[in-house]
Length: 286
Image 1 (cartoon, rainbow, N blue to C red):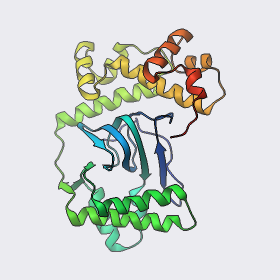
Image 2: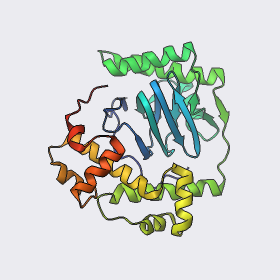
Image 3: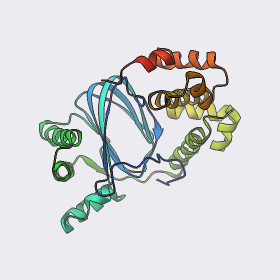
């Protein structure tokens, strides 16, 4: 997969321990997972409800108890439904330095020779036990948790390789690769310019298509129209700003590309079911 400009810029974890844990429920400002990618790998476990996940052009519904594995560099996004889920985003290279055997096997994981199954369902008792320990220690962060987490990661990958929860990698056709690259370009345009006036023609140009074909293509890839996705993304950014800044509702609406406060409130309620002020008063608990 070609790595182009758009990717999540956030650093995950620290230099010494490049892993980060996220616990996400309906009140979280990033509850819905907008399309993005990062060079790090990611493991998601579904604790409650359902999660409609798209990775590249693969789509599936994960349910409570399922585990999702995302290889670095893959475009992905998802729509949760009454869902509670947790994620660990990690740098695979950081696990390769402990032993020559570990490095050899993890290089197999990071190479283009095999693809670990994206949807690990049903996870099974042993794999669930491994991930319970991995996520539990990332969450509590007790003294020495780093060693326990790293050990759990080795167990995780060892279990995957031992039980064959992977497939021989199939090369992506030039056509499919180009379709995903076009989508990455569009997502990059939305990411960089959501606070400005963006037209359908602007997005179509980013994909290198005419507007009519682009609308059909974008809906096939995301199940949303381009403008619907743009407004959805703007509201997701507004939620984050509401939760992390002291700006007024009007200022946040303007900063997210809405020139009219009443339209911003109406659009916000369409996607979140509540007004921005009501959202602000909702405790961020799950």
